[in-house]
Image (tube, rainbow, N blue to C red):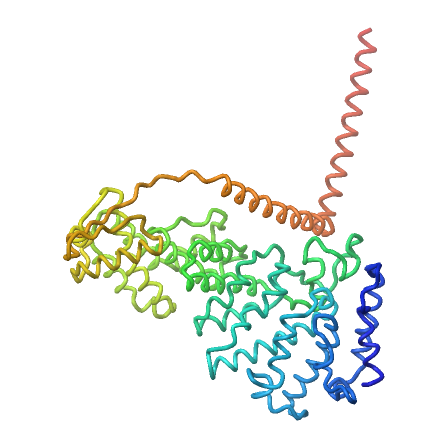
Length: 504
């Protein structure tokens, strides 16, 4: 290994040259290092350097990203197979083990440009970290907080779907209810999905992986190794699981957005059960967000809409009864009856928890309804109007304060005397506050940034579309049509000229 180390350290040049390497030179040099690493055995990569120790202690992952990655994977594979003396996989790869800290260090500090040249190895490391995290969660749920940022550094910065690791990560957050761990990734909108072809069309503007790309879709491809082949099911699962996580976070708007993407996805004959599940959850989340049955998303295919409604009758019935009871100022009894009648359905669909939240939300919407009629009410009157059981004024006052503190109720509670029943709930007037100049400028800047980002992705999408066979066929047809039209116009002009000559 002593003879290989100087070659591994030769790239990138250190100190950096006065004139940065061109993309062509960068590509040539990093590929030579990559070839050397592929030709070096795992035994050499883990043997260490005489007098200096292990490669993981010598290399800097932020500078020598690829050598560090290959050495780390050699250690991981050796520990997993029991060939190296770093302990079994149950200890070496878990928190506190020999390889746990190097794995986290790499994920925190790797060079995102160099990693484009070793996509498969990078995904192998992610899989190892994800597996170790799962095993650790089985024993101890209190993982280091840094585990939440393992994917965000690379995934969040490029905003494209990399493969099935996202879904595995989200699936692991659901049973542990550690929803915040997935939020940094989910908050990044996906503009493109990786192509399923082995190779992509040559892009003269971005000929090398190290080039500056307008969109990550030009290098995050199956051919680069940075992603697996994604199926239609993978696409639907991403948005279903993402919607479930946002539901757990009570971010209703974002949850509805994710569910609706799955619901509106194209179908062949009938929607998949993943789409049906997304629709059922959307009905319940719609009630939690707005207290009513939301209309079907506008771009949903008609056949799919019929299937959704047929398979989610119990859900729509519950939402309709909820909405009618609130509008008619009724108590919760009818909603309870409807929920009880379909109790087994909620259990079979694993949506009982959401239904229970819907029942609990009836009280909140009953109070919000009062604000449309009254300017102020005593707590005792609120109890009477909402028919809350048990009739506890102190508990109701505390509940109202919690709604106000969380921003769900625009009102205030005036404490007059020691009896909470005589305290007064005053609803705030629904008046839109004029935004300040600073707020207007911030909103304008945010919108401008989003539009620029969207324009860049649309430009890349247009480029991709122009290279598809369907587009080329369409362009040929349009060219023929234009030629035929031009020929017809010429004939018409010639005939007109002849008529004029005859008239004269």
